Each structure stands twice: as structure tokens, then as C-alpha cells.
Length: 248
Image (cartoon, rainbow, N blue to C red; front, side):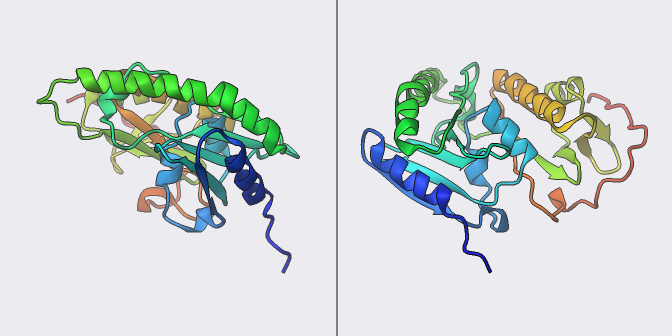
């Protein structure tokens, strides 16, 4: 068998050593075969990295961690001969409500030179992350003390060529899903997005994420996993006329 490609691992390890501060690097060589979906769920991006996660399975990746808790996600830039995508990862110790109205510090595309990439991360991505994190922390400090900090998220997964998510218990969330192309599948109690090219699907998912963020609700699109239907559902059947969603 051919030796595995370790270019991403090597790139990430060198990048960690070139960034300001103390960084460690953890390489995940078989991400697609594990249940470690929280890695991609924490990616703080609704732009090109979100598009890439929507269109391509992540079979390996790397996570860079700084001693202050800052994390960066590194993946291959599929479709490009020589390059990577790098995105900040959202902190997990802050309530979802604090993220309302905060623009994501969207990731960047870099070439395979880790020294140039370190400059781009330092000058472009990290400042955006620091600004977004400061806003989230400020929002968190203003939340009422009696407010429950439990996180509410809409989790979207792949089912064949469709994206599905469970029926939410809030009418405003259901309305947002419907406005951006999701159809309600009453028998399965799912909302299904099945129309359009992958780029159109990614744009719809990104728009849903922005709208839900305004409500203080997180949005997660788990990466595509080859050969595994999502949510323990049967493979998607040819679409039938979906039942209109009735608000409660």
C-alpha cells in the first residue's frame, strides 16, 4: 500500500512553530472514520471553509492550539493542487446567546508554504478572531445572571445528496429553514434541503447560519461521511410533494 500523504501534518506542524505564542499541533489522520464531529462543528466560519465542509468529506485534518485556548482548524483545500484552508474554532465555554450578531472570523485559503501562511494567519485571521471573541465575551458579560447558558444548536447532516435536520421546537427556526429551501418531511419529522448544485446548497446552509445567529442559535453542518446515512435515516427517496409545515 502507498504511504499516507503527510503533507498536511507537516504543514500544520511547521505552521504551529511559526505563529506568535506557544502553539501545539494535533493531527487527525483518520477523521472520517471517527465520531469526532465536534472538530468540524466548532469551526467558526460561514464562508469558504463552510462551503468546503459542505461539499467535501474531511478524511484528515489538524488542530492547532495556543496556550490561551485559541484553536485553529487546518484542512486541505480540495480542488486546488497545492494549498490549505485555515479557520478559527469557536470557544466552547460561552453561551450560544453571546454569539448573537457577531460576525464569524471567516477562515482563509493559503498556499503550501507554512512561513507565508503564518504571516497571513497572524495579520488576517487572528485579528478577526480576537475581535469576534471580544464581542462574544462582552455579550456574555451583559447577559442576565438568571439566564440559563445552555447552548441551543440546529445540527444539519448529510443524508445521501440531501441535508437534513430534525424538526425544531421553535416556529421561528422552522420559518428560517423554510425560507432558505428546506422542505418539511412530516413522516420523518425532518426538514430536508435537496434542491440545487452543491454550491447552492452550501449558500443556503450559510444563510441559515447567519439568520439563526441573529436569534442566538448555533448552526452546525456535520461533514459528509462516505457510505453512512445521517441521523440513522434510510437513504433519501425521490422527493415527493412535502407537507407544508404548520406552525404550532
